[in-house]
Length: 263
Image (cartoon, rainbow, N blue to C red; front, side, top):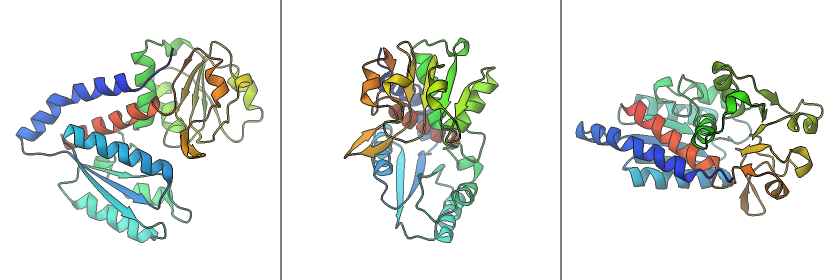
């Protein structure tokens, strides 16, 4: 079974229609500000997708594209202006940032009420939420399965671990300090990947019955790719493709966060 994200994203968008109508009746147009620093190719792809979905939903999308040589103060001053702008309901600082910028300092400058990426607030981070949406949509009873997460980043692995723990699930989380990754991944009933490292997971690192959720995205040889090599797709029966798996659901969860922030 291939775990496509589009039907899940469409379901989420359908659930948002009445909320968007209610906001428009109050003369409120949900508005998202996205700050991009530099020209990261994966970021450009996701920003284009966000813009297209925003247009489809009737959401105002404002892109602030700064040069890669922009200073930390320039970025923080822009965030500060957007925090004060009552017509902006959600702010996204597109990651990764260019070298030399203090990611934590910049993210902490976003108002918690407008932090729709959930990096500095109680809002659920979209990618972590998207992974749980996929498992639930396809009726995968993950609470009784062994979950292994590869990647402990603040966008996916870290928040997903917290969300699962809050549900009484104890995932095994691997990172760059894990001594033998293959030993750990072979334990997984559900293997969740979030490193952005192409071909990190080979076919001999998963069992035939492993459910693979690939949330790692990067550009390799001119195309989007995940953390698993193509040979994995030929071995396991259940997996999320890249692109077309976690990505569309992540954008839908982001839009849901935006609308809740506007409300």
